[in-house]
Length: 305
Image 1: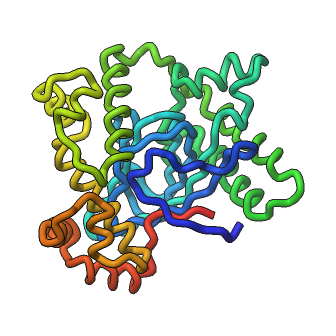
Image 2: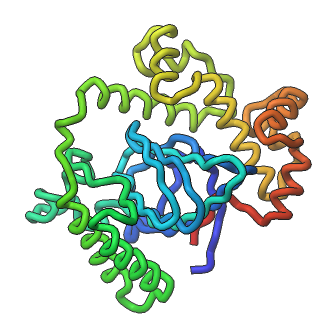
Image 3: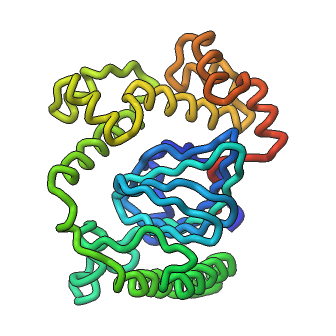
């Protein structure tokens, strides 16, 4: 399992987690002052994360969780989620991303119909934050460590063992789950609209984007759209787009192979002086200094094995 690549934090996910036959992937995430956040995104797969170092604020389905070293987080399929870390800190985590179809959610047996399909459809919500004091934490830690060992060794038949461990994860969390009916319908509709907008921005961030263009996706007026976006994202839409472009540029620069001008243009900044100004405002240094610091610290924000 030595093949590694780097993921940009905004990914939404055109990224394929594993393959069609084995939709399972391990990720190692490292964040610091140079790269302090993973912007809101979503994908069809579920996630199981263990925080190895530091603390963070996770937002999952508009709910906020303050998590720290040793905590586990479960992100359900298709759930909008993001994370940020405190200033002057370093964060490390290990994450397993898997599709519920790997567990048999599309089957016609009682396990799929009663448990797996509802989890996949988010009509049955499992707990997202499993603190060290949570009753399920000891069992989940045992499972997570077993997944690590089995995945690293990759002995013949390891896929079967991983599948059984993930099924056990669902079973351990089930007693603490709740029905989705408790969520207001309007909030669910707003989440769906927001996901459409974020997906569009993620696919077109390098192009010119306008509020009018994005408002049409939600069938909102521009005024309503701006209020809607700020309510759920905590920033204006234009601020979000600028941040996303800067993070994409930082991702390119961190690889050490992309000239500053190319990173600027590829990320949606046709004006180089404006790019320099906004980059320094966000990261506290010029793009060139950023490259040097990233190489010095050996940081690649997202890696998978």
